[in-house]
Structures are given as C-alpha cells and as structure tokens.
Length: 200
Image 1 (cartoon, rainbow, N blue to C red):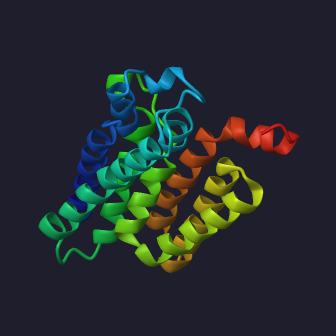
Image 2: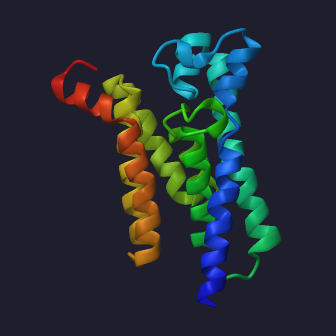
C-alpha cells in the first residue's frame, strides 16, 4: 500500500511538471511578437503579461495558468483516484509538479513565472472553499497596498496555513503545502527585499 502511494506521488509530480511546462504567458507573448521574458520583470506569468501587453493578455494568461493546474487535477481525481483515501494528497502533489514546471520549464531553459496563478488553480481544484477566501484576501491587499507581490505573499501564506489546519496538520500534507509556500517565497525573494526596504 505504501509503495503504491509513493508510485502515485512520483507519477503525479512528473505528470504535473509536464503540464506546468506549458507557459501561457510565453505563448501569449509570441502571439504578440515578443518574448515576454525579455520585458518588464522578465517573468513568464500573469502579472508581467498584464503590465507588458495589457489587461486582456493578463486575463488570458491567468485563465491558461489556472486551467493547466485544474485540468490534470480533475482528470486525476475522477479518472484515476476515485475512491482513493489519499486523493487530496496526490492531487496536491500533482499540483506542486505543475507549479514547479511553470516556474522552471525545461523547454524555456528553466525561466518561467512565479507560480501564484498556477497555485490558485491547484487550490481551486482541491480546496475551493479556501481558494475563495484567499482570492478575496489577495484582492483586498492588492487594492489597499497597490503591491501585487505583497498580495500574492499574503494569499499564499493565508491559504497554506488554513490548509494545514484543514488537513489536521498531517505530516504529509504539511510537507507538500510547505512546498507551495517555499516556492512562492523563493520566487518573490527579490520582491520581499524591496518591500522590506520600501523600494518595491
């Protein structure tokens, strides 16, 4: 039984990575005749797409990044993991693979986005009730502070903490959820420094 869980977890991580490597921002950028990674912040993500190419491009990028997490998770949940008591855990591991692929896509020389939109897609698919409140917090912090980076950090910390509580601090869930938080903080490390110094 334990071997089966490890196999599913490893397969989920690899499959998730493959889905994550599809870079919506890069495709949207190419459709507009640019390499999005050469403009703005250099990230292939929703925020940079919106700032560089406008609101429409940003919305398309966000939807694409959310779907590349939602689609494989729903397929796994209903076609492979139906009735599996570890379904949520495997889906979260799958989602973590998607985030890693998004942040470090092999075909783009590991230069991707920051993973917040993708992470929101994972949470929407696995724990929508928590995702809704995290989204509300994101919007409120963004409107008040005017900093997308701060809103992203607050939302992931809020959602991650709530999810650990939701899953009763089960060690496996804590480790996986901590992975999401660690990735988000690492990708925003430069933003955090600027926020602390008031130069964001």
